[in-house]
Length: 600
Image (cartoon, rainbow, N blue to C red):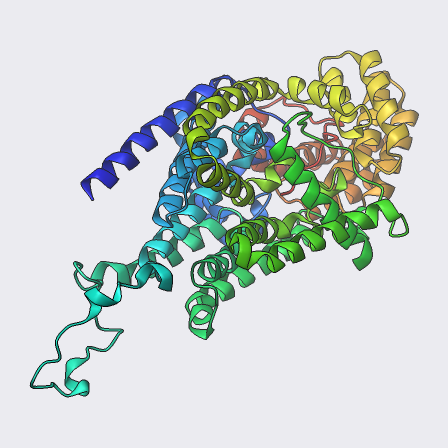
């Protein structure tokens, strides 16, 4: 036991050290993309009442992951808006998860545990999850997911030893028949009450399923993609014993129920609050199967050969009639069938690992609508936990088939993957560096063009902004964000009519979003159409009651209409939501940004 703990401690120190070293550039990074929605401009982080709202008002935060926002609330109280602290917590959570991967694999007696944990810690495909502050969702939920899994496997008895290894030679098995036989009923101790040789009664073990459930709920409250854990547990039981019976299902039934319930809440909020609805998500069942099949191979390929990693991959054109696209899901099913047929020859491990990969990925394979599908059907952070399946399989294969190469492979992979992760972490240095890298690797990314255009707009570089935004509009005619930003350029150039046309176009594209209402109202207010502006602003604040720009604009409209009390009411609301913007003289504007939340 002491040696086992010593090995865990040494491995833990190693994993934490190499993770911190590889992610040093991320510690110097700033805030990017939707970090403003989650941290820098998130009003619930600013007060004690905000903590209540995080837990009791699901629509007060971008997504109802209250444990994530609670950690942000605590950190905001500790170090304000210094990004270093947020990045450090992300890196430490990822390092802790790598240690948990090692502990779980050792407990399951899977060879190559340290090799697999090193690859998980240092694989560059995980940089998006670790270096992006908003993806606290991934690293926090992953940490609790792995804690729950460790508690579960520690509570279960070891897998039965195969019969061939259990047999004792006949000569050693024979014992002289006792003269006085004890009745069978008195001799036998019931199997369920008989402790393992050399162990005490499993009092502590009895508490571990409860701990697993608590950790599982924490994982769900951080990100509900972890709802697949009970299925992963059943896969492990099948791998260990070759069967899953009713008792196994009964043990995970509470997890299945809680996971399904919270996943349903997320699916509903994704549609009505995050706004994952419309043409971009209108896929048939056949098209969703094509997306899922292709995504599985995409993620496996990025694990095997992590080059060309980018923040926004091209969005595939899905065509159910294209033979090439049909080949992806067919090949995936064929691979699973082959592993099933070979399970007696090569063991159940390869099939269990691949199924873990697929099942854990399933919430992000296209069967459920999530907001990022608007930009791409794949993203590196989607496979954070799922990658453990294939990484474990690779580590075990090397340890079993090429044991002499296990340590050299660990050293070489640690160096190579560490360097790749270091380089990929530098991409996340700033908002601008993320989008410039994206545009270099994916020139057709209208999202990158839009956000770079917005950046130039904020700097007052109107010509450069217009160039990027016009290209974005050409690539995605239905992207309301580009029209919001183009309208803001026209306003800055003094072209109120042009600004109004772009804002009206944005509103027609997204009548369920507060920004176009505010920006159109702002222009109408400048043109003297204040009553119409007031109607639009009331609608904007109905959609998003905490929309600071909306409150600023409506306060200005009320002031011009000679209604100072109403203007003051909205100014005071701004002071509550964003004190730095509620000072006298703070301006409203066609300020609504042409960005969208990252969703998942």
